[in-house]
Image: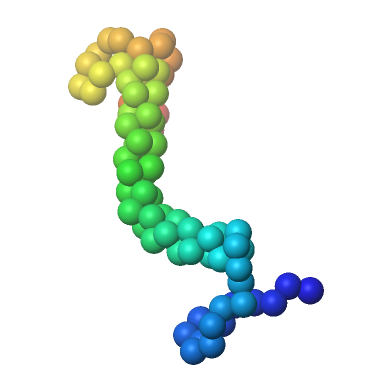
Length: 77
C-alpha cells in the first residue's frame, strides 16, 4: 500500500528519485492550471464563433452561410 504525503509536515520526505521529482512537478502543474484555463476557454469561444459564422454567415447579414441556418430564432405566433 502506498503512503500519502503530509502537507506541512516538519519531517523530511521519504520519497527519493523519480517519486520526489513527480511531486515537485505536480505542484508546478497545479499552479499552471488556473493560468491556462482562460486561454483554453478563449480558444474554444473563437472556434465556436468560427463555426457559427460558417453555418449562419456573418453577423447582421441577410445572406451567407448554409441555407436554413440563421443566427436567431423566430416565433410563429
